[in-house]
Length: 232
Image 1 (cartoon, rainbow, N blue to C red):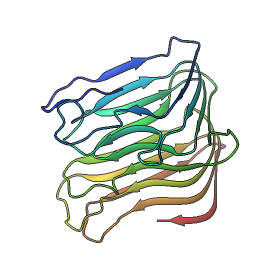
Image 2 (image 1 turned 45 degrees about the vertical axis):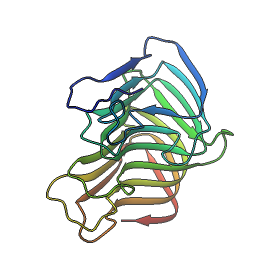
Image 3 (image 1 turned 90 degrees about the horizontal axis):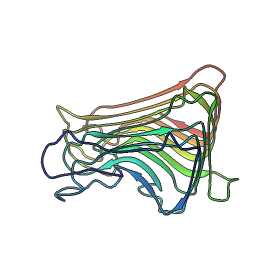
Image 4 (image 1 turned 60 degrees about the vertical axis):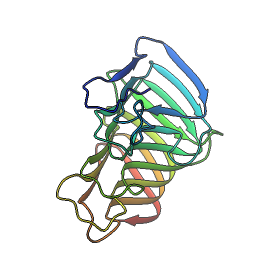
């Protein structure tokens, strides 16, 4: 799902499934403005929004980068952003995991208005860990004045996730300092458990690169379990 163009514009491609009772899909990737590139008259400046159905069963078998579920990926000019709104019940099975706000775009994932919402994240088998979550990650891009930000807000429901690596805010791989731009990642939990092996928060790739901010909020009855390493 994506609208793009070679010039500035205000439009956004939108798909609203919130009126459906259920949505089941098996695919290689699910991309919400997740394939932006530079100089392409169709894929430059990507923007999109997707609202899922009440009950969702999503199985993805795509590559590790960008992850099979990607909300906001751009290496081109300034986009209008990307948003994924979850339903009441969301089962997302993928070996690769999830990317939100990658390189040069502002993107978000959050629960919608359904009560008692639940999101479950596992590998394709439905039992093991997803490989990675990249939230506000600009590591694979260079010098840019475009702000990059990823927000994953589970405060409206319960999350049950097992992930190998979670990155919340990681800057550009460049040694030239930026007067503008920068990277930010935010992850918010309010109920349920996020079980992760390695957690990286607010990581600056080089000493003279743009500003990086990483924020993890663990509120209410939520539990964040880190089995190996926290890197700040």
